[in-house]
Amino acid sequence: MRRYGKHTDEDDIRSRPNRKGNRPRTHIRPKHEDAAEGMVLTVDRGRLTCLVEDRVVTAMKARELGRKAAVVGDRVALVGDLSGTKDTLARIVRITERSSVLRRTADDDDPYERVVVANADQLAVVTALADPEPRPRLIDRCLVAAYDGGLEPLLVLTKSDLAPPDKLLELYGDLDIPYVVTSRAELESGEAVERVREQLDGRITAFVGHSGVGKTTLVNALVPLERRRTTGHVNAVTGRGRHTTTSALALPLAGAEGWVIDTPGVRSFGLAHVDPSRVIHAFPDLEPGTEGCPRACSHDEPDCALDDWVAEGHADPARLYSLRRLLASRERTDGD
Image 1 (cartoon, rainbow, N blue to C red):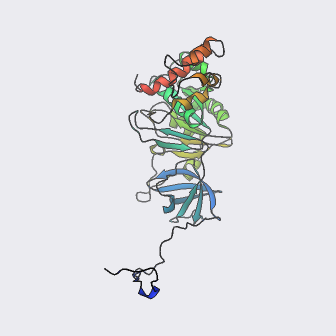
Image 2: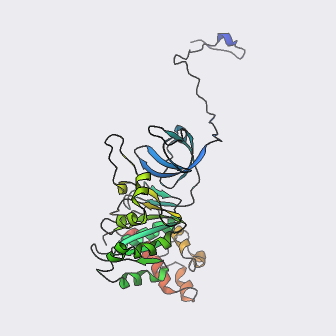
Image 3: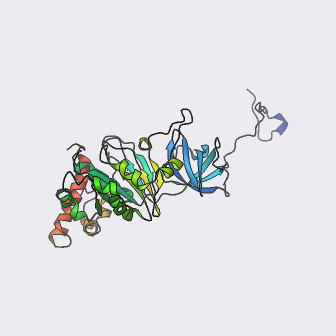
């Protein structure tokens, strides 16, 4: 083996020719200062549909982003062909820091968390009052995910013509969550749609709910067909549109400013990623009382300082019960 000393001549160094004829790779990445800003509307098998100004553009993620994934609601920077014409492809080169994230895991034992939606202002939890029966534990889990991710919750109760909402509303009364109650007749007349639209005006709202609660029916009423056709995905092979709730889809709200993000129906909502210390932020009347809690307090144990805080009259005992009920939902299955 040939060894080189400190004073080698460049001509003595063996150079391997580049047979491909391309430039050598570099660790210096382009800054893309002229990249256009856009919003991710939907993601389908590596292709992302983005809104750039008033154009819907198909894009793919740049290699330099590595394993970082863009999700619906992300604000991104794009380069390449931004015309939005057929068979063109842009490239996402940056993902802007997120203001909020809605995350979930497949179940409570799954360590892998999945970001469902980014940058949403609120989470509309849609549940039927009957047919199917309400699932309070699933609602609790959605609320925990909202509080943990920085979203404000909104309860949308459907099918009030089949059952009264009083019992369910009483269960969440101490959380001061805004709500809208709708019936089938009100949805058909448009009266209920207007009440929901008032809660969405000027905001980005993600909708969640399990199958059969009327979530997609409500979204369809909020977003006209022509707008869904503009932003919805069409399969390039079959030419058929995909069912919009098989993946998250952002749609512009009709009759007001704002966006509706329709998400697939959920059977469960895993919370393995949730830290109890973050959920307490949604309870500003209780949060100061945690200063005396032991390290890594679950807020539902004998040494928790919140018991004395409430006993001294600083907060309503019902609020502490609500907090502990939500945290306990992390330990129970959705069918409980």
